Length: 81
Image 1 (cartoon, one colour):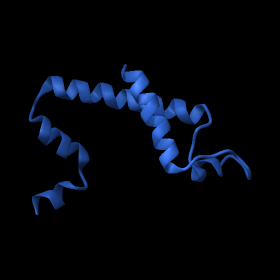
Image 2 (cartoon, rainbow, N blue to C red):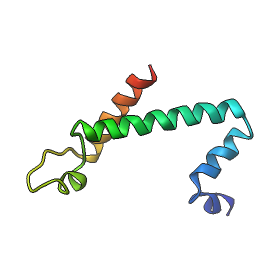
Image 3 (tube, rainbow, N blue to C red):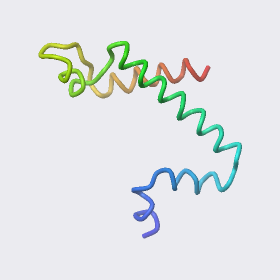
């Protein structure tokens, strides 16, 4: 029952696991900010899934969700060093 109640609140779940660890929260904030920059950069560079690409026009280039996630993973790994 407890898990079901928390399932819709991922931030609360992460916070529970950090258990008040300020350093953990700061690290999580850095990863979140970096991931945000990587996502925006990937889309700005033209990497996007079909659903988003179709908003741009009738015949845009696009990638599968798995390919997009792989692109984000590579960008995040590079950004995190």
